[in-house]
Length: 235
Image 1 (cartoon, rainbow, N blue to C red):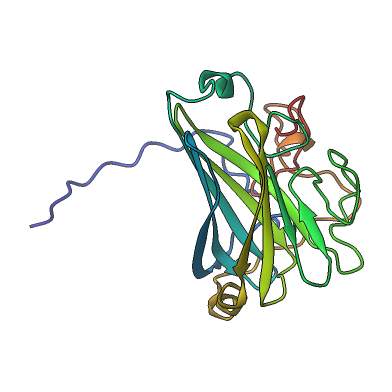
Image 2 (tube, rainbow, N blue to C red):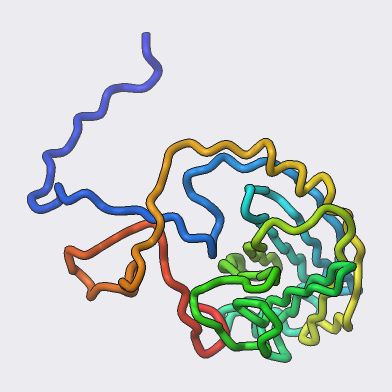
């Protein structure tokens, strides 16, 4: 005897038969692959009231998903102020700043959306990294109260070996720190990633994503959202 009872399917709504299109954009983790799991973590910032750690979590042939987590002591610096803006590593002195530096002097910084040596807070055209540059693209955050979580996309796939992770968070009294992490096992995990099904590349010379059509328009093309900068550095 089955545990779950069958639930009747609702009648289809009119006008919902149009097939959505999903695109594969290099500026984000692929949505049609199973990642190679790495799980290399390290504490990169800590004070009496704050602890921050980084995890190189999921690896793909073209990049790595990085997560940042923070635990905050409610008796420490003003926790409630974090609720008054969209907390995201960026160019503001109050926000957390994250940077990566490789032995060959290549670097990536969360305050620079498209890397390549451009100043904090600027965005280059959607061509992605150039001349071998590595890009640290912030993907969003979630949390509240005394726990916060961020996600970032590092692309292309970095070289194996050490990387220096820099963190600074003035609002939580964390001066600039540096932690060396060995990415050898992280990069090797890309060989264990598996493509499940193909997706098309974004069309050239055409807008796409959530911001490419008015609300309610039939031009909805899910799966790839263009990022737009808001007043606090993320949107």
